[in-house]
Length: 318
Image 1 (cartoon, helix red, strand yellow):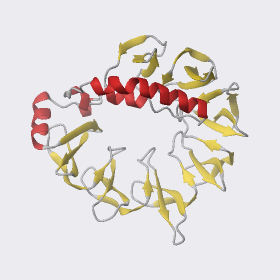
Image 2 (cartoon, one colour):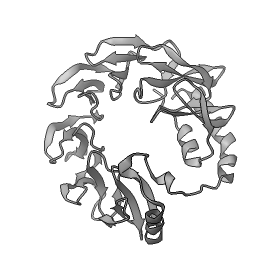
Image 3 (spheres, helix red, strand yellow):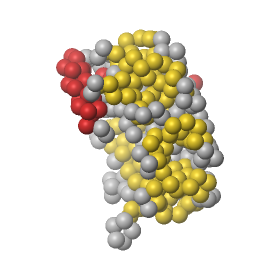
Image 4 (cartoon, one colour):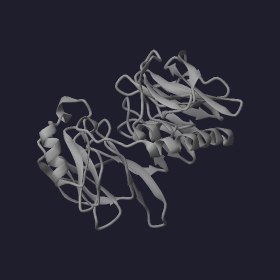
C-alpha cells in the first residue's frame, strides 16, 4: 500500500476510534438475519437461543454459528442444535458445506449440514465453497505450501500445484505460479495465461488484474476491457452488482468513488473511504461520518454500528 494512503487511513481511523468506543452495540433479532426467508428466526426462538448459548452469530443458508463454553456448533431457525458444539472453529455455511477446525490440530476440514465429514481436518489453508469448488492448501515435506481445488465430495479435482489460488466465479479461478497470476477452468485448464502481477476473482463477468504495475479490468477471454486511469486503485477484490469502488490520491488524502464494468464513473469521487455493494447498498465515509448509499450515490442512512464502521476502515487496495 502506498505510504501516503496508509497515513490517510490511519489518520481517519484515529479520528473515529473515540466515537467507536462510545457506541453501545444493541443486539437484536434482526441483526442475526440475512434477510433471506431461510434465515428468518422468530423473536421467541432467538431469545431461546440466547439463553442457551454464549454467542449467536448471523444466519447463513438457514444455519447460525453458536458458541458455548468456547466450543462451536450450529443451530437452525427453530433454535435446534444441528451441529453439536464440539468444534474449535466453524465458518458460515456456503453451498451447503461448512469449513471447520477441530481441537485435535490447527488444520481445516469440511462437513455438511448434517455434520457428515466431507474431509478430515488436513488442510493448512482452505476457502469456502464457491461454484461447487473450494480452494485448499497443504504443506509439503520441505515446508512449501501449494494450492489446489476439491469438489463437494472431497475429491481433489485440480492438484495442489499453485503458489496461491482464489475462488471460482464465472467458471474461472485465479491461480499463481512462478510469481505470476492467470486463470484456470474447473478442469484445471489454463484459460487466461499466467502473466499478471496480481489477479482477483471474477465478478459481473470481469476481473481486476495488475500487469506491469498497471491496474486493469479483463473479460472472461482475458481481453482488456479498460485500464484504470493513472493514480486510481481498486478498493475491492472484484465487481459487485455491476460496480466497484476505486480511490485516488489527492494532496495525500484518499478520495473514493465508483466505476462500472465498462470503466464509466457512476458515483462521483466524494468519499474518504468506500466499500463494495451488497444487496443494493454500500458503505461510505464522508466528513468522517459513515453512511449507506444506493447505486445512485443517494444516502440511505447514517451508520452507527461499530461492526460496519470497522469494515469501512479496512479497504482493499491494489
